[in-house]
Structures are given as structure tokens and as C-alpha cells.
Image (cartoon, rainbow, N blue to C red; front, side, top):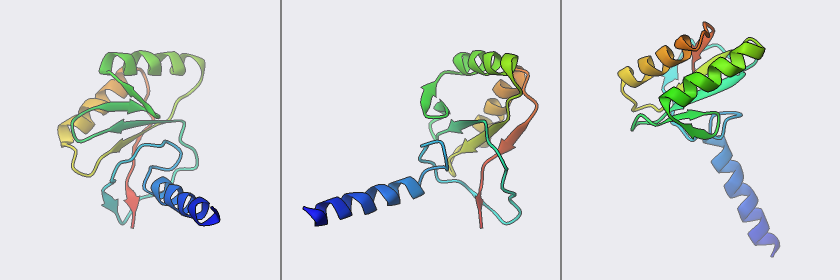
Amino acid sequence: MIDIMMFLLVFFMLVMLKMIQGTGLKLELPQSSTAAKLDTVTVTVGVEKDGQLHLDRDDISAPQLTARLKDMEATKQVNVTIAGDKGVEYESIIKAMDLVRSAGISSVALATDAH
């Protein structure tokens, strides 16, 4: 019984290491030798290879994303990190940035895997 529990513990730890820290999104980020670690990330917008958007852990459409970010920005300043899967089209990242900026947010960063 202990062996099964240990296996499950190790399995879930490995799965969590593959996810972007603090978001639960399983994306393979591109690498960057000059990436800087941000002190705080308020909101993460994930973009999958098929163009699907995520706000933190939730699937979301483009209009919903803009509306939710506007609501958040109305109460406090929001910092957004866009995390695109390694194989995502550049156009999808730009569209996500446009959605974030159309919500009135100017603090936008791109997530990479620092190597």
C-alpha cells in the first residue's frame, strides 16, 4: 500500500513540474537564454497549439477573456503573462496580446522556459 502511495506522489510531482508554475496549464514553453523571472504574476493567459485560450486554468473564448480582464482591471492593476505552447503559431500569440491590450492592460509579458 505504501508503494502505491509513493508512486502516486512521485507521479503527481512530475506532472506538476511539467505545468507552468502556478497556473496548472500544461504547455511546453520555448526556451530563452535571456529570460527574466517576474516577481509576481497576477494572471496567466495560455494559448494552445489549436488556438484555444485559457485564463489561469479555465478555457475561455476571446470575448469572454476581454470582458473578464476589463472587470479585473477596473478593481486593481493587472499584470498578464501570455504562455504560448512551443508549437503555437505566432499569429495566435499576437491575437492574445491584442485581446489583453483591448482590455486596457499594458503590462504584458511572454512566458518562456529559462535555460
